[in-house]
Length: 97
Image (cartoon, rainbow, N blue to C red):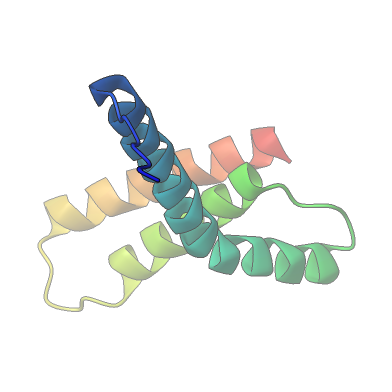
C-alpha cells in the first residue's frame, strides 16, 4: 500500500511562522524572568505591588544615579547631564508610583 503526503508551501510557511512566534515568546519569557523577580523584590521592600514598568523606572533611576556618581574623572558638563537625567527619571518614577 502506498501512502502519499502532500505538503503545500502555505502549510510549511504557517508552521515556520508558528515556530518563530513560539521562539519569540520563549525568549521574551526567559528575558522577563529577572525583571519579574526584581519586581517582586521591590514589592517586598516597598510594601506594595510594583509592576514591570515601575521596575524598569526604578532601574533607570538607579542607573542614572550610579552613572553620575561613580565616574570621578568626568567632565562637569557630562556630570550635569547625568544629574538632569537622574532628576527626570525620579520624576517619571514618582509619577508612575
